[in-house]
Amino acid sequence: MFKKIILTTSLCLSVLQSVEAKPSSNFYAGAAAGYVYLTPYGSATETSGEPGSVTRSINLNKRASGIEGKIFGGYDSKDICCSGLSLGGDAFVSVNNAHSRKVLSITGSDKRTNIISQRYTVGAYFNAGGNLTKTVSLYGKLGVVNSRFVVKHQTTASSGYGAKAQEHNLWGISPGFEVRKDLSNLWRLNFEGTFTWYQSWKSKDFDPSSPGSAFTNIRPRVLSLSVGIARKF
Image (cartoon, rainbow, N blue to C red; front, side):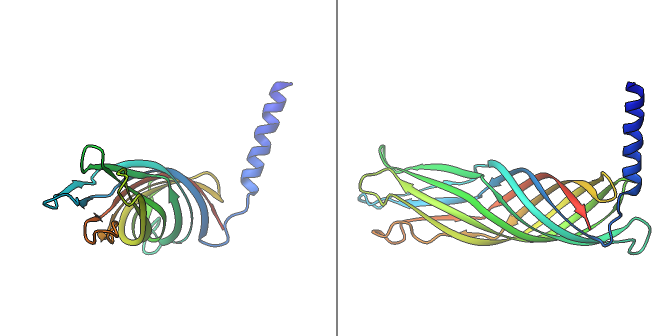
């Protein structure tokens, strides 16, 4: 009895795979999730109101990690100049919860906390690659992205300015790679890794009572590793 069930199930799966529709175009869309590693690379500077106007500064090279989610869509043109070579491109939108925190001590009771986070990212990649096996392919990626960064600056001193945040969009250059594994005619798994260099940015003054006394410089770097699934159309 069990042998008949197993044989029937195997036969049904084979039939479904054989009659599954093939994609009618080279377009695809999907979703992915993974980890990001954010390093702000920069400094926070604070000038105290004490006699002598003492200036203190700390580096912000503290890496933070978080969970990333993204949706994407793209197009591949097969067999450009030889069998198996593909050129194409994709666009995406992503969000993550990574934030880097660093504390600057002004006096014993006065500490200034700097928190840098990445709110969202949009971007586009050019892809070039080819088949490693019948069902596995490898692509190189080069893209341009734009991300919304948030710099939060807060003080614990009772005479301080509390917590303030500034947001700014930064452009970045993003090389990477992608491994694709076909699951069927229509579905595939994606494993992707990218590293993004962003332009630098200096915040406006955080302390309205003392112009030029509290600001942050950042030039972020972000490593992203994700696994996703895509459907071909």
